[in-house]
Length: 470
Length: 159
Image (cartoon, rainbow over all chains, first blue to last red; front, side, top):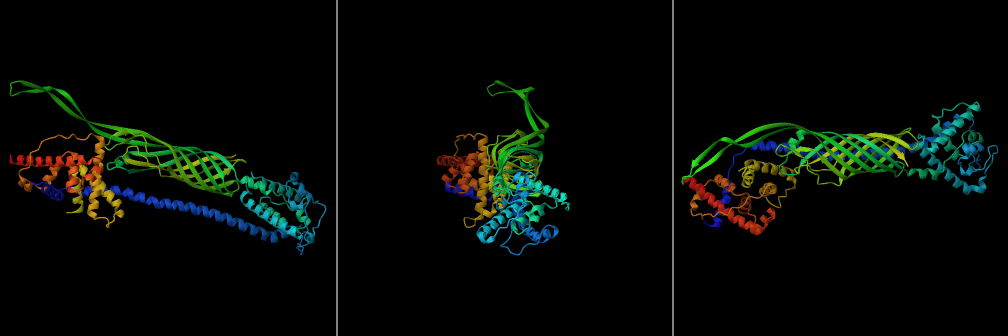
C-alpha cells in the first residue's frame, strides 16, 4: 500500500470518527467558566464611572468655588452701597464729585497693632487732620491708585473666601484683632456692640468699601481701620510642603483569573478568603495652587487571607507480605517470589493556613482641596500607585487538590493599583492637621503564586493620618 | 456531524485520555467564545479557525506535560511491512482512533499535525520546538508503528 493512500485513508477515517461523550457536562462547565469573564468585562465601565465621578466632583468643586468668589464679590459691593451705609450712623453721605474725593485715614489705622502694613496711599496721614487730595494734579496717579486698590480688594476678598476661617492664617487673625479692637472702640464710645463673627464678612465689605470709596468720611474710616497684608507675603505662602504619616484599614476583594489550561480556580476560590488589609505610609504633599496638590510617598500594605481546606487524599503503600509463591521453570529450577500487600489509605486533613501578601509601593496622587467650614477641608485625589516590591507567604490548593507552598512571585507589574480617595482634614494647630477618609485601590497588579492563575487584590479602606507643614 | 463532535474528534486525536480531551475542548471553547469577535472570515473559514484553537490548546497541554516529565523514550522497534491493505478497509474509524492513541505522544502529535491537519514539517518543527528532521523521522516512525499496531489488532481478532 502506498504511503499516500495510507495517509489519505487515515485522515478520512480519523476525521469521521464518532465519539460518545457527555456534552452537557462540558457546556455547563463552559458556562461556569465564562461567567467570571462577563463580570470582569463589567469592571471596565465601573472604572470609567469612577473616573467620571472624580472628574465631575473636581469640576463641581472648582465651579462652586469660583461662583462663590464672584457672588461674594458682587454681594460685597452691593451690600456696601446699601446696607452698610444705612446701618452705620457714622457713615456720611457720599460726596458727588469723584474727582474731589478725600482720602482720609486715622493714625489708629496706621499704628494699629504695631503699625502693620497699611494702604500705601494713606501712609503718613494723621488721624486728626483731614487732608484733601486734589485730583487735578494727580489724576493719572489716582487712576493707578484706584487700580491698585481694586486689585488689592479682589485679593482680600478672594483670600477671605478661602482662608478667612482658618485661624492659623495671619491675615484672618489680624482681621479678628481689628474687629476686637473695633468692638472695644464702639463699646467705649457707647456705640452698639458688633457681633464679630456675624460681621466678619461685613468687616471685609467695609474694607472693600474703604478701598473703593475715597469719599468715605473720616468718621467712617475711623471706625473701620484697615490692615492689609502685603500681597507678596501671601503668595509665598501658597507653595508649601507638608509631610505626613498615615495608616489604613481596608477590606480586600480578591480576583483570580486563569493563565493556563489547567487551573484550580474553583478550589482556591472556595477555600481562600481574604480577611483584611493594613497599610501604613509616609508621604509628602506639595500645593501646586490654592486648591491643587500632589502627594507622593512610600506605602507598605499587608493583606491577610485565610485558607480553609479539607484535603482528602488516598495514599498507597506496599509492604512485603508473609505469603509467597514459587513456580518451577521449564529447566527445572524453582523461582521464589515474595508476596506484596498494597494498601490504600484515605487520609483527610483539615488545613487552616493564614496567607500574607505584602507590598511596598509608591503612590503618586494628584488632588483638589477646598475649605468646607472653619478649619475643615475636603480633598479628592486620584493617581497611580507604582510597584516597588511584593511578596507572598503561604499556601494554596493545587491542581490535584493538595496543599502546596506558594511559589515566589516572579512577575511584577509597574502599576500596583489606581487609587481614588476622599478625605476630610481638620487643622488642629497652625501647622498641623489631621485627616480621615475613604480610599479605594483598584488593582492592576496581577501576580501568580501557582503559575496557573493570576490573582490581585482591590482594597477599600478607611485612612487616617496627619500632615505637618514644613 | 456537529461542530462540537468535530472538535472533540480533533481533541481526541491528540490525547489518549478522554478527560484530557474534554479539558482541551472546554478550554478551547472558552477561548473561542471570548475571542469570537476577533474572528475574521476573510482570513479563513470558521472550521479551520476552530480546529486551530483546539490544536493549540492540545499543544499547550503537550508542552506543559513535556516540561513536567521527561519525554517518552522511543523504542526502535522493527515493524513488518503492511502487506494486507484489505485489513484497513475492515477497520472502523473509532478503532483507528484508538490505535492512533496508542502511539507515543510525540509520534501521535506529529502524525496528526502532518497527516490529518496537513501541516508541513517546518510548521510542525516551529510549533513543537524541534528540528524539521526530527519531525520527519517521527512521522516515519509513527506511520510504521501505526501499521504494526493495525496488523497486531487484526491478528488478535483472528485468534
